[in-house]
Length: 312
Ligand SMILES: Nc1ncnc2c1ncn2[C@@H]1O[C@H](COP(=O)(O)OP(=O)(O)OP(=O)(O)O)[C@@H](O)[C@H]1O
Image 1 (tube, helix red, strand yellow):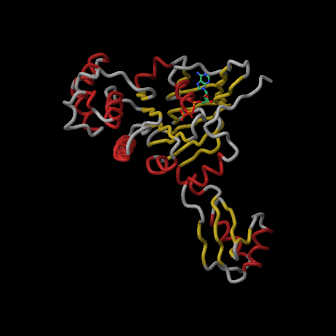
Image 2 (cartoon, protein in one colour):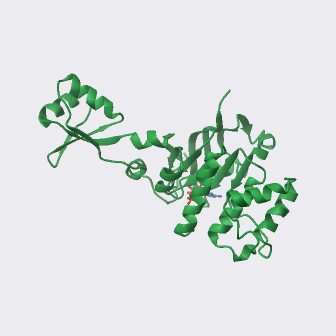
Image 3 (tube, protein in one colour):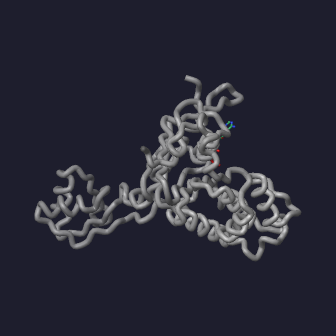
């Protein structure tokens, strides 16, 4: 039995453009989101995140491929699982003249959720103190938190948030990120789509990186941080070390008098050099965040642009 909450295989979505071409928004995407924690769905603008989410929620039809939520094929079995899924994809419609709390009470009534959940949801998203103010007086960040509160009324096991910090000021962003982290810690699986690397690095436990609708990398954030990292190798004899590393299949480079080498696992460098009797005086990772890695992966992608593909 799979413990994946979201699983897509060969997922593809084509849109037909007015000029008769095909725009492939999602290319054969294999997405695997494990249960628990916050999973980042990271990609530049226009890379296919919203399209993928809309397909998962039954709002758009895939051209090809399969999707499962909680191990159930969707959209076929969506009615069986949708009760376990909360999503903030588009701005929800709240009544501007009602208070935040009243809006939630109406929603709770509509879905048959116990009234007690309203206050619990308000507490979770940290709207206490403002819940009796009219919705129209809320800041963008408060509106976003109310939207998340609305999804919590059905106590979802999976929460899908499409770029929830878009358009917020720094304080609003911080609050939403805290709320998302708390939800992940509380056992809800959160899929957080974002084009902001720092956000994924700060909030997520695992992530999938896409560019132009294609999977670029996937794994725990720690794995992604470690992948393809470049190291500065300090040794008494850099020339000898460069020979040894090259013989072992690495590609050492002498940059500004320093020896730099890419490696997935730094222990491999230590071992190879140690076996040749070369002892490191220092091994320093040169890239400590996802930013450079992400930029490297998405290099050559048409960031934020629509990729037109001619009909084959
Ligand atoms: N209904 C549609 N008809 C035609 N093309 C579409 C449609 N919806 C999305 N696209 C195209 O599909 C591609 C992926 O868009 P999508 O909104 O999924 O990306 P995204 O990663 O969510 O980007 P953003 O962060 O800007 O929302 C884009 O090229 C977009 O123009």
